[in-house]
Length: 205
Ligand code: GTP
Ligand code: MG
Image 1 (tube, rainbow, N blue to C red):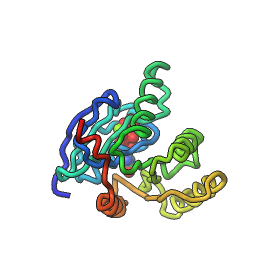
Image 2: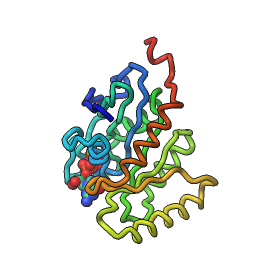
Image 3: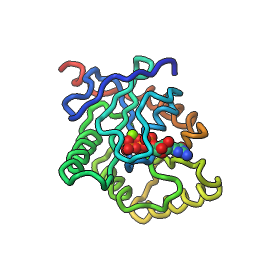
Image 4: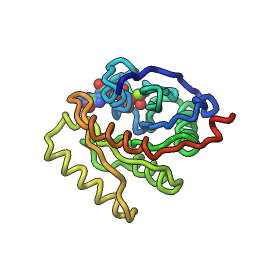
């Protein structure tokens, strides 16, 4: 990766870039580490805004990588400390983006590697499955516990998903603090980029 620059923030789907470049997006509960992961992947610690307080990212943020593709930082879901209408607004923005963004190649769903499967994430994952959105799971903050504990939690997650799904999504383990998981995620993206041909229609608009 040679360059990664902020492109734009969008408050609604209609505002996202229309240049037809492939997009790789990051979603998950508020505070799970989406923005930190983007900074770790791009090796630019201040690219996406990070905060210890949940609810930091409030818009769809596009970061252009190598003038060729986008990393997309999304607001988190499940943040309790906002008004009902604000929450509904974020949820609509997230759902609109993940189900209707024409150039979305792949969605990384982040879950905290320390927690057992949470209903809100499982519901979101079910929605993705039903809508046919290509996604994988990233287990974040693995530096906060032993490797054995992370593995045990991943196994638990697999078991939980197999109660509903016949096939398991791809899974990655990451630590933005320790820069773990970077190569696996970037290599995966590179492989998809070779096969990803976003809709021509987006370019003609
Ligand atoms: P919202 O934008 O509010 O939805 O949050 P987010 O998912 O973008 O999380 P963000 O990247 O802002 O990180 C939230 C907090 O977790 C910050 O205090 C980060 O420093 C911390 N954090 C994120 N990733 C890691 C990690 O891999 N390890 C550790 N130890 N802390 C992390
Ligand atoms: Mg964020």
